Length: 347
Ligand code: SAH
Image 1 (cartoon, rainbow, N blue to C red):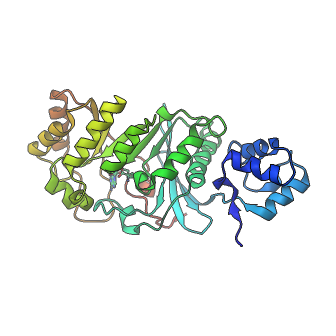
Image 2: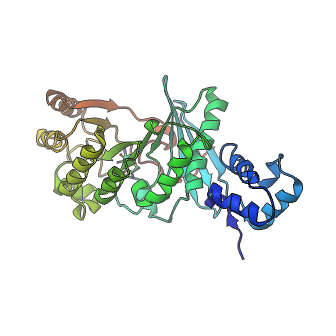
């Protein structure tokens, strides 16, 4: 029988295991602290446990810890990690340093089931969902690297790596519980952004559950025919459904919605496109991040001209919608948004 990953057990379940095996239940607290707070990768590291307990644990469980497979450092300081999972699949996690922040950009799935035409991860298809501990470990790793490389603490977490977090909702929520818990990394939920391509049903569920993290929606077009042509799943979950879900989100949470939006030449760079965006998002306080397009070796997409991007900015501002033009980081090592696709490291 294959051994169970001990981190799929709750604290209560671990305590129960100890009680059933004739030990005191505080051993459960000790092990739990080693596994999460201290990121132990095996039972031998748990030095405040008697050897006998460590062997029983070893006989019964494994610790499926992530391993750093490759590290690449960009000239702008961004660090991209290729992460090997217990079954040898690989995902990527990125550390992004700026003057004020250090952000961890983490993955929620191996590959992705959505087929956004402009995203390199889409080419990998979805292999599997990440487990809560695999998501947690990425944050713990970047937090450690942040101290090691920059002597600073991790300040923000964005679910903008590989995968669609709302298609792995349960595990993402479990991971966030541990990331924010005092028994885990103790990072405030307000510093976490979950970015979604826009799954209406799951946005409503999140609103009902009154989650405390921030929501970002990758909109890219507020015209159904255009959005469907670049994000084909929009055909089944179209903009009116998305808008209803977001209205519900706002009604329940009263929290601002961030839209991520790339302006592409000849695709969504006209005044009509910008006006459609204004129409789409003015129902609630919102913010638009105009993000830079990161090339994925595809001749169908190219960044719109500066003039057209400024035009977007002007139209949004005239309509009192908060807008920022975002520069991308880590492009030279394929670590920027949409470029995560396990390209082999050249170093
Ligand atoms: N699946 C989630 C999170 C991962 S993508 C989502 O769709 O939001 C993170 C962000 O990068 C999204 O806004 C996505 O639309 C954007 N993105 C994808 N490919 C890109 C590319 N080639 N250039 C710039 N941004 C891209």
